[in-house]
Length: 94
Image 1 (tube, one colour):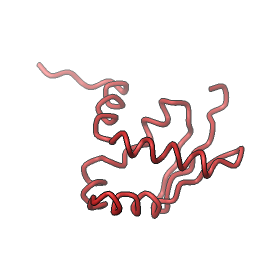
Image 2 (tube, rainbow, N blue to C red; image 1 turned 90 degrees about the vertical axis):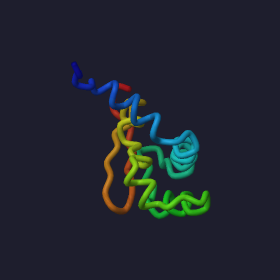
Image 3 (cartoon, rainbow, N blue to C red; image 1 turned 90 degrees about the horizontal axis):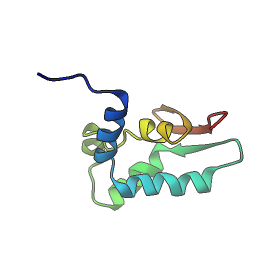
Image 4 (cartoon, helix red, strand yellow; image 1 turned 30 degrees about the vertical axis):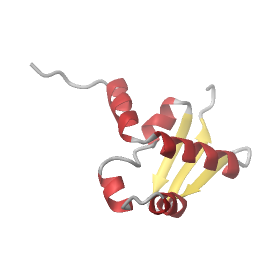
C-alpha cells in the first residue's frame, strides 16, 4: 500500500532532481546579489547558465530542475518567485 509523502520527503526528492551545480550557482548568485536585506536572482541569469551548460531550459524546468524554493526554504530562506526570478530574504529567527 502506498503512503502519502511527507513535506520532508518531497524536499529530499526534489533535492535529487535539482543538480548540485544549480544549487552552487544559486549560492554564488546569493553572495553576489545580497544587499544586507535580500537578494534577487534574475531568471535570465539562470537560463543563461543552463544554455552555457548545454541544457534546454524549457525541458530542464519541466523536469523540476528549477524547483529550488523548497530547498532554500528548508535552509532558512524566505523565497518568493515570479516569471522574472527569485527573491530571497532571511526568515526572522533562523
